[in-house]
Image (cartoon, rainbow, N blue to C red; front, top):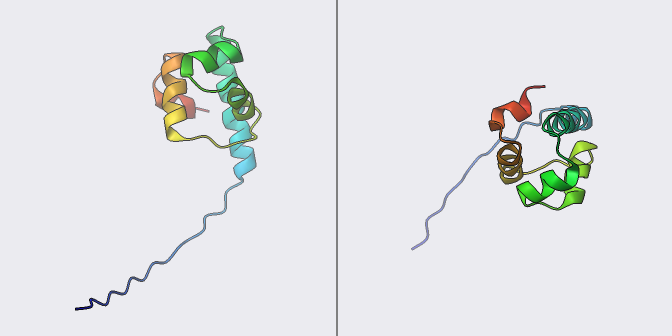
Length: 86
């Protein structure tokens, strides 16, 4: 017995200046980190992520995952929403 299924999915591409957004997010993260008097190394250790990842996020070189955002917010002792208040 075969069940034939047809799924029609439309994908919509939203054009966003990703690099600009990543740069702004990174600058905001750097400001938050410095306001907490943390080095990149301290933040990385507290968030249990590689130190070079903190630097790459702050420079806007990479996009990050939700789990990393959660770890960063916990390490900074701020609500995750505050990471996006820029």
